[in-house]
Length: 354
Image (cartoon, rainbow, N blue to C red; front, side, top):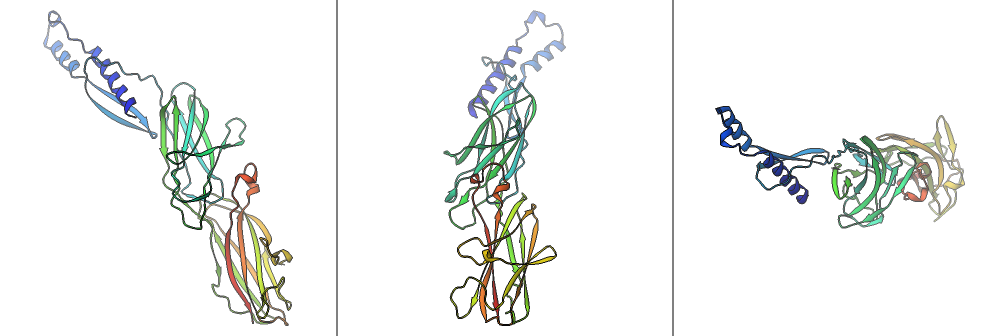
């Protein structure tokens, strides 16, 4: 902001220059008056501009004639940005900030800078804002500018504090790679001037983590049960509802494909205190599998799924896999489900019967 800074410096110098008028000799009557004149001649100016929610002091030199006076009537705004330390992919992650406006009420522009696209994007980020009157969630267009992905909207900033609530769905990478940390910067603009600006610390994408136990399951003998346990962990800073689908591929070693385990093999999952048998949807191809349940998953929370395989007395030796697909419940998010990408985390495990 060089032009704004130059204007402040010039205006401050003029005000001090106007106040520093040499005292005529005939008015000097005492040493005290001489000391006062020297102090006034040595006056300095100080321009203070508020940027990035903090005061940055800009030191100026001695007052010089010919400069306009400073204009301190323009109110500045500050921000208090709260953003996730880790974003959940495919999920609306909450972001909030407070505009503290010490001046008169005005309309300001909120500019969100989501950073440069540092990886190939299959689907760009989604940004929603909560209307302060209706409390409904409104879609904010995201466009690609010179600095990267940008979103902006106008809002009334009253005197005092104005709280803004946002939801940010990260961009979906085109390839299955670990993308770099997500960037978010919020700026408040009025008449082309930056009233406040703050950047959140870089935040990584945090998909579900999980694993089966035991890692390598021994073959299940005829007439015996075998147990598998899957633990899911949410490393993100937001909780959300999760849909759990289970698919099974278990066929005799002599058969290439099959629709259902032969020989009286049963695969069950533990629903509270009850073991429930999988239905035909778990073995259908193609498809997501059988929907077991939709469960809330809190931020940094953990879920445990228990599976039991019972090999019937006539079960032939078989080899196959269990696949657990964990998908965010898009129907529980604000607005149409098409706003949100369809994402899932897959966790597979080998199963065999002897």
